[in-house]
Length: 159
Image (tube, rainbow, N blue to C red; front, side, top):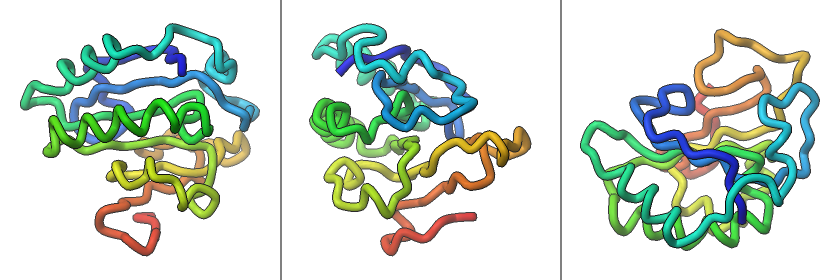
């Protein structure tokens, strides 16, 4: 897996101050996407053990609330393969940190993924330009849902 960027003090992609990892690779190709360069699976840098350790260290300070994974799309099979052991490591090392994951897929299409067992909040659904709303917190279009996977085991949205 490649990644496009790491932000170590992000306040736009979940509550509090967060560490955000933008993975490369997305098949959704949403018109109006804010990160179209990340559609390419080969874009950016390889995600290595060194990258993983850099992220773990960035997550350690008490003022960091958690980790956000965006893209590209983390739910692409190639990305899930690399992210699964990483998210397992984050939860083992830093169980107090929450994990937010953004995907252009709907939860109904990815419910079988083991990756979701390590995710606290899922922001799902494709970006739809006609439903763009800059007043929304932590999402770009009205169709996207913020789903608390820990409180809503049945997959209901917090909308």
